[in-house]
Length: 551
Image 1 (cartoon, rainbow, N blue to C red):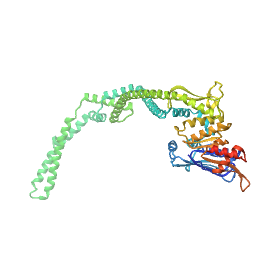
Image 2: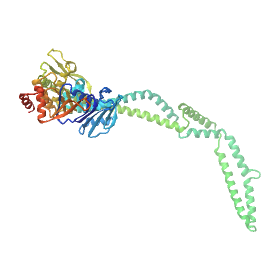
Image 3: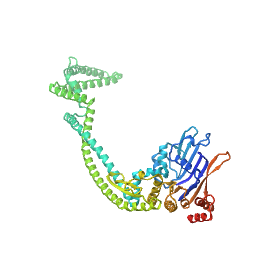
Image 4: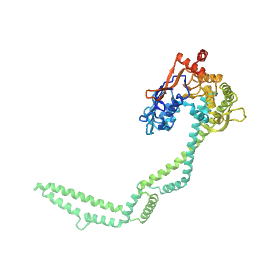
């Protein structure tokens, strides 16, 4: 709800504040007093373009501020979150225009661009002057309107949920099928690589160990000769080192009783003798391990050659990397099998959800068809009351493939003059007629649809008398559920308002004409409506008529 509109330094408005209330707010005043200028200022905080020609005082910026109660507006709260803006129960939208032509927009003191401003403000204000054609060209508006009449909003929401789930599942299935197709193209080659590695069946570090063994076998003769020479020198030569060490240790032991100081040296020498004796034995054992086996060498060379070939093929360096690659190939092929299972499951899910969408869509379509006739009849009744007796309103429902709103394309059509030629409303109706048609539609669905603040700019143009009274009654009905602001020249409409604003011009202290607004109450309001009936000096009859209209 719009709580307050402040306009400063805009066109012929120096400083003006309007505080609309709940229900129907009417704005009246002489032609040229500035009513349309107020709407022009309001349109700036709805995202319209601006220029410096609107500035009265070129030394100061123009500022337009709108204060909105948005505590219960969940759509606006969600839109703020999408735009990454903070939510406050009272939202302040401000537009500033500098003398240089620079324009800035703010929502709760946070700068925003015009696109964001337009998207968010459309959830707060429905300015009929600019919105009528857009709404009637909007398929969602027409669909939502018919759903409100058919009492199928909950069913439409259920359908939309099922539709989104179906489309989401279908997208996942398509992605999985694309992945499956791509993997199938790679599967044969990966299976070939896996079979090759599996057939090679390398053990951990086998290639590296084979290289070491090959080095030993290639040098077996030299290794045996060195081991044999060492063992001979230590234990089997003409003067074996082991024998000499033992003899020397015994000699030292023989003098230990007469020369005790030699005992530690004798013990160390005995220890060296024992160590050398063990080394000689181990050298002999190592000789027995070293063999010259051409068959083994050939087998090792084949494994090494195979290992080098696979390492080079895959750009790897170690046996461990080959084993890891083999595991990766196994995992990929296993995932392929899992992907097949997942596709089967997703296919079943898509089929189940599609059946649900078809069932809900058919039920939704049936309710829309059932309600469309009565809705069209009701709008035609109202069109007669608001001065369009020759117009014929119809609802066209065409079957289309499932979409987020159902399986129907809803069209509001009009034959403006009983010509037998029906056209979409936005093509068949004039601007004034469009406003009245929208008033008829919105008053019919007011209870069921959440609408923002509704502003009608001279919706009663071209009508008078009973038609104008009916427009006033429709506005009053609509205002029971939504805040409505209506600019009018008809006393029948002005009298139905809960709060009445009067726009007028005055000359300020600088000799400039300036637009002002005041709230009319009591006798002052009666007099204003009487003047709308009988002129500047209303008669007693005009005053009584005004009272009757207000009663």
